Amino acid sequence: MCSWRLFLVRDVTTDRIAAANKVIIAGDTFEENTRSFANVFRLSRRSVTLDVVLLNFELSFGYANMNVSKSGYRVFSANSTTSCIELAKKITERLGVELGKSVVFQESNRETRVDVKESVRGQDIFIIQTIPRDVNTAIMELLVMAYALKTNCAKNIIGVIPYFPYSKQCKMRKRGSVVCKLLASMLAKAGLTHLITMDLHQKEIQGFFSFPVDNLRASPFLIQYIQEEIPDYRNAIIVAKSPAAAKRAQSFAERLRLGLAVMHGEAQCSESDMADGRHSPPAARTSSSGHPGLELPLMMAKEKPPITVVGDVGGRIAIIVDDIIDDVEDFVATAEILKERGAYKIYVMATHGLLSGEAPRLIEESAIDEVVVTNTVPHEVQKLQCPKIKTVDVSMILAEAIRRIHNGESMAYLFRNITTDD
Figure 1 (spheres, rainbow, N blue to C red):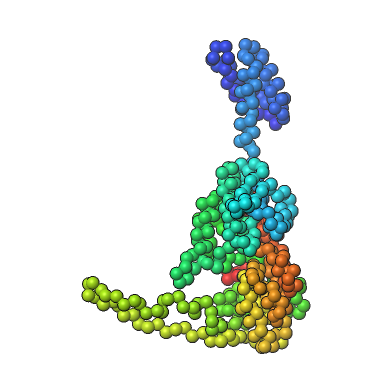
Figure 2 (figure 1 turned 120 degrees about the vertical axis):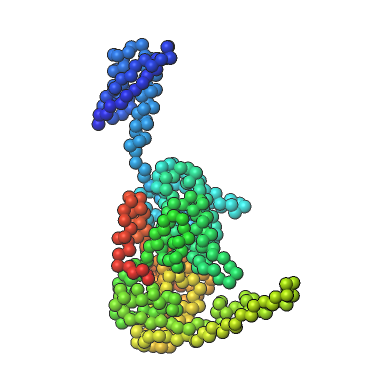
């Protein structure tokens, strides 16, 4: 493709501008364009040194090419664990790109080191990070890699964190802190400009971030599993193990055209009942001003009834839905009550299968028939310990989100037929 360029060439003998010519650039390569340029100048100004002509042309030719180039995108894995690499490869295979070359490792003193092995200048970079059992190390790997990409002049840095850690610590409880807000600020400071996650524990967490957050949903994949893998699912009933999970359960029930049951009540010894000093009498103290303290009215203690089932589960398949399954004692207790009430098969559906501690053993020994989770969190070891655990792949929606964000397309298609309560 031909184009015109204006070149000013300096005569090295007189230190003045020797000529200013419009030169037609017709070649596709640097050598062809150089010959065309040199021939024109040789006819018009033979005293001009050819080296100066070539130098000026090379700079101008390179600058023109740099302006018309388009930025691409790369996908990196923030750690070298098998599960994270596996999810990253599934995503890159669907996108038709190669996984970015980088090395993430721990020094002998447990410091995290990141070495990016290729240029990322001017590109959109997507960092995939799954959260293994060592949560704090995974967070540090993500922060160090994001900062490394930022200092290497990446155009945009998008974190792909299917399970966002510390999401349960998103409210002020007793004398604690909102750690989720702290983590959001750290990610922004490290260089992240966008976040892709899935099924945040509370949707309000998106307000903690100073950059855009796309909170994807795993419910379409779980609903598809119910329809394809559970025989006679039309005889099932969706169960919320607590009133807090009722909205999510209602969303599943409405899309599957099934009934809804809610577990009401809690065990007597719960975390919220533990003494934290708030009900202790204040220390006796004398006031120097002579004014007595205010006498506040006594607050009645909250009575928690025993766990009951609101809804008929007799002779039905019970499907318990939630966003996270970590400590499974509540799920096991719920399954036992549902069994007593006549449910003949019990499934547990959750997006994030943390399955900490003795969870595999407890599930294996419980009345639960199957636990279905997605691959947002690595749980290969737990699956070996408990064959009841099944996995649903969600790499498809993560890959599509990456493609749409890079191309500047709308994300509304990924949220079709999904209610705000899901």
